[in-house]
Image (cartoon, rainbow, N blue to C red; front, top):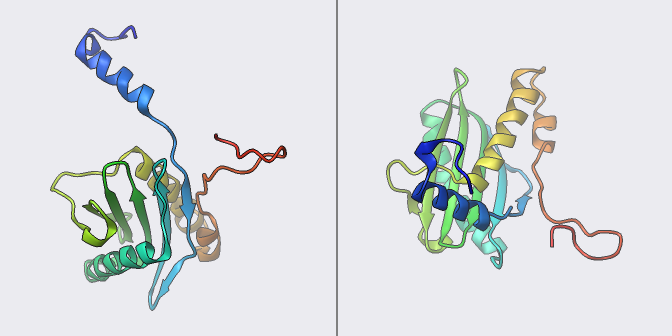
Length: 176
């Protein structure tokens, strides 16, 4: 891979090539919104190849997210949030984003080998490319349906990212 900048030659170019060759999109599955008194949450699941999820995992992640959301409420959240449960190759990640006043958001990340041992992620951890896909969509949905419109909560809830493979007409799922 030729580097367009000398700073990205050698080992850096090899590292970038390796990342590019290893990257594969992951399906994003939206779940039904979680409704609480004074709070609405759009939950998602992202799965690496070969990973499966079940209702028990979702409920365990929901309990962790709920504790974080309660803290976010005390810190000025405005009642709209997004939760991403990511079943990755190397572990499980939970991203909790609450919209707050003054156009801000609160972001918390939890990680573990399994959903049962989610703990706050190390300081400095940030969402990965697959989690950022969801957060990017949600930022756009928030601007379109809440900030740029007449606060349309129903449209915001309905505007969910779904990248699961769809069956083609010949019966073979797309994306395979």
